[in-house]
Image (cartoon, rainbow, N blue to C red; front, side):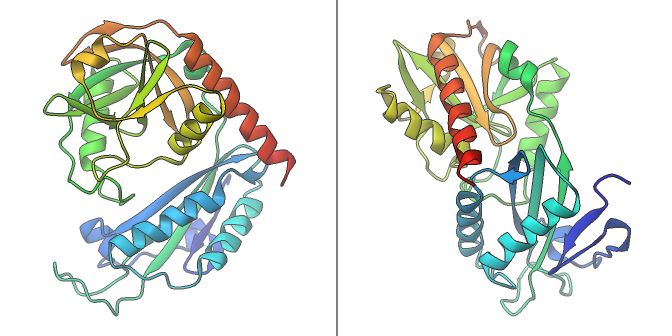
Length: 285
């Protein structure tokens, strides 16, 4: 069976041997955090940045790691090797652990770390041809900066987009664009890049952070300021970013506003520079 080895606690075991307690708080409450890291040529990209955010998310939720973050990284490397992943993802999750079901959590609960790795090629078609999107209200909670297991708002928005034959949902709060259901959102106007600031209303994506660094290196102005749905509609270019997608051009938006977009030179330039950065990372591993 492909991808049969998983991380459970501090051990790499066969997936069929995993047993999750019925009262694990991740199962009962979605009480936990996670990270997804992309693997290129057998090497995880931006592993330190991902696990720095993992620690930050844990701290914000008053959760304690059962072992050090360095040990988590070691187990992640073992998991990738055990599943022989060349290109793909590794998913690492931590819940607050098992305790009798009650809304009040106990700080003494033993957190549980689990994970899996999966082969996955980069979405070349979306990167080259772009994707259609659907704009819908952002119904999520007010701590989107935490990469928590609570993703119902995201999944419902993604379903709405799919029902309209769109590959991603774009979200807005009272007319202010925030991000995608599983991506960060950027618009380009007059050769300047605009994206929502890294507040509690969005996840400060690792790929987003790389893009902002790259814009500085390339002399492209980036404005981390809120922008409206009207500004989205009037944009010259639109693109989204995520760990698994890298950068994908947006070719249309439907829903609350409607527009079509060309795949412009700024988007293509940033795509190229991000791929260069990924290649350089692999060379220096």
